[in-house]
Image (cartoon, rainbow, N blue to C red; front, side, top):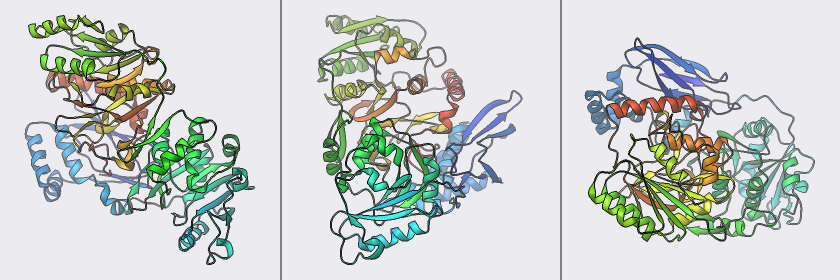
Length: 625
């Protein structure tokens, strides 16, 4: 057992515990939770042949307690909490699967469902000690009729801040009620005013709504974050009492959901440069701010700590979509609509639409290759398609006959590549043969479910700032198979929310909207061909079978192109059904590639910017660690 404290002003980073085992000192790494609230706890099974334990953490991390629990005690706790998990753990122990045995016990005894956040956070919150800054902050409370009673709680919390605001002003959407006297009387919101007028002589503007109750160190933490940023926001307890554990800056998610919320701290210098026009209507103040942050490439800082109890931003999805469509001046070129109760941003297609080359690596399995080819060629609405099959030595006569029939379609190429299986090399060969400006990598065990899937991916892939685009993939039973990859999940990288219901909204409702992720699976991945070639395609030497797609997305990110996952493209995926499970030599090869991935992308394993450091990397849900 470990307990350790962290500095809330330091960059978020998950410590990594490295265990050296046996006479050859083989390495095993454990990714630990971040101390986002000030304190973190970790419980893990240390192998009996351990020779040395090393902790890799930032200079801000202080180990406060090291302890040990007997294995029998942990098994007993697992039995009491989740009896069937205990049975599974003992089964894995009996069959010699140390990793699964360990993870089942951790998931049962050291991971907390997010519904139990109040008790979890109470055991981990430490007061933040922050060196004061000279930043002068003006707080503006955006008040509507009926907010008078909530104002006192917000004003009281602001007066109790360790970083005292220079001034607190109330702006009313209409004439202040007669009960709002003295400091709370404020003034009527002036739509023609500029942000300079709002911020006055202060260095920064803090926006809140009546009823938002910031913790005492909220402004101090936001001010510290703003020292190297234009905008700063933090986590909150939402109006429903649930935690809002937010990702780092995710522009698409922010446009669709407004997740930064309140309190929101804005640099006056940035406001003057990016939002020179009038402030407009108070009710839709935040969408123009988020859009300006996107178009101006603002530096946006996230404080991964609960900073307030928030009333929300007051915009429902319909109102947000209308506000986004009504944005004035320079703005991102999308149209906003509503789908499944959430905002969907539709990005433009070039005219004429680009040719898309769909690359499918395959071998034998007539049932799979016929289904996926029929889906691409007959069930996809997008017309400008080229299909490239890269065959890894099929011997099934029925498959070869099927290829013969496909060759009569001018849209189809078939490359025969009977070399030892190297998925990355097959994908690269397919892209080399492609004529389209957009390439879609598609597994042979994927099935088309709806005709608009390809257009939705192409709209994203044509955006200049986007590299890889991933789809929502479902297992045959309708549960989630792929909703984006979290780096660090499972110790290396994994699919978030696997086996959850297909309509799972995800934390902050993010699975209902397109949003940034660190990586997506190559089972269905779209990318502009020139961007693919610019980063050298898949690394067939280091990652011939596994982790090649995650490595590819991360290299795109390092080159300046973000990865986007979209639910607008939904397909079925029978994961790895054509390859079979990884056991024996396959498992050894997997571990070798996993070790290479860990060494290459250690910095992202420390902190995936789109996954909160308090969330578990042991389970595949959105649980607390």
